[in-house]
Image (cartoon, rainbow, N blue to C red; front, top):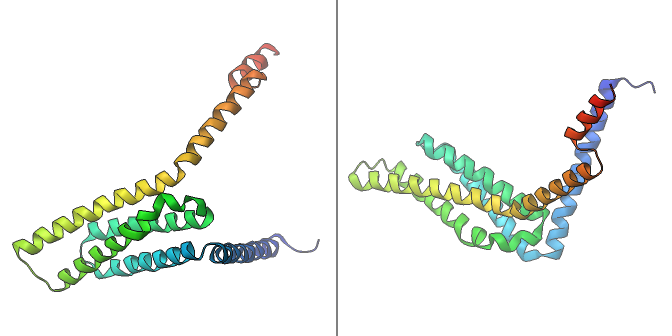
Length: 185
């Protein structure tokens, strides 16, 4: 073909991106058609997550900003995981119904108090308690994400063990191959 490598790569990348957009739209449509309640829950979670992300630049506390960015990343991954596999929805029901909305309220209250520039013992205690709680929420959200993949990790670990056993049984184990290769020299 008379097309050079760079235009071919550009055309291929554009085609791939278009395919991803079309496929992603179909997945969301399918979810909307098959489980409207879950679709609405995920849409609401996306709005709450965006609200957290939009709040970050308004805050003065750099530690809190970092933690909220981590929370935003975890929430985004959790949402995408549930969109890909709606059967995992039950594992995060409390996450969407309680933990995420409460996190949004905490961030809003922190921002509101911080904007008032109140400098008292009570405000300092409020900042410390809220920052500590949001750090704990960050850990909880990471655990939620990990739990979503727990069974997948266990299944993969079992598959790896079976594969290694089969390789060894067929004489294709790496250690045995080295011995056999050395003996043929």
